[in-house]
Image 1 (tube, rainbow, N blue to C red):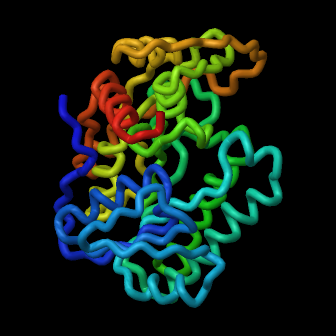
Image 2: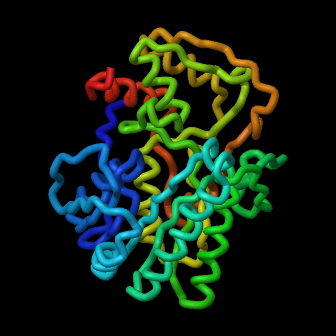
Length: 318
């Protein structure tokens, strides 16, 4: 299967501002949204890929630069908010700092969106952490949220605040609870993302640290499918606000390692003992996204991993 990392989207001639656009998801989303003549402005402190793209303006800035951010927010029709300063691992080591960055900064930006009369805001939440341990697998959006770390608590808090902004100010929004995305521009050095981490290390002939026995199950989503879901959320005009965006299929860490080996790579594993592996199984129910957004993932995990490994080898990050 050939994957070209550009999702053709039907949302034409819209002005879309992507905030936090320089990372793994943003880099791919910029390409997708610009592919059919949308005007895109991408704000980030830095960018993984700075090559020129037609209809795209990149702005190196921090959200604290109020004047610059206001200018671009005023220009936009739609906003995709990708900013996340912390990770599940780092948030718990600096709870106050992560709350200031991931909650307070988001609220300040939402205030600006209200003032600038943004047509719709798309917020990237975490389907892998906000549900906690749940008996219902796959897990639907109606499940009571049970965040178990500071990162997930911040995501849930922002979700709730968005509902308040809609109630008070009629801010239109969509929350996407995304599983575990992977694909091009996900680097092992970022220490987030199992497939990007394992695959990148294997490409460099470096050992992979496997915590526990490898039986932990997660739901992995190829980045092209995630970008298509974001496009669908921008286009959506229904009443639902929250969608799981995932493959809907679970795979263990051991399965992921075997699929990486199937690409021809040798994977050296260093087993690490771990008493607390967190949530044992996380798989999301994507029925709602299919019914309301008309979206479903197209990339099977074996093809996605093969495409990622091929990209990584060609990218020069050996």
